[in-house]
Image (cartoon, rainbow, N blue to C red):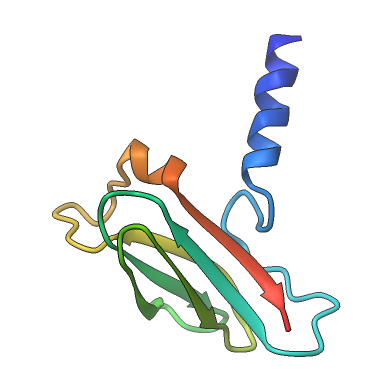
Length: 107
């Protein structure tokens, strides 16, 4: 029962995006947007990985306590954020994982 609660809580926390940050463009006939809500105490940088490209595309910076929308190009596979002043780019602080939310929408 306890494991089911943890799994359910994880599914709810990942709300409007794939748990892995994947972008799901199915049924989107308009512009697809990435919405980043940053309730963390530091700025974060948003990136998108494109099909057929090795390097990620920088979308922009989201300041602490703010929300930003970024248009996604067709062929975007996934989106993610990193601390803006990361000394170790592969390290994501636990507080950031809980306080920065990604969501994709179609307009």
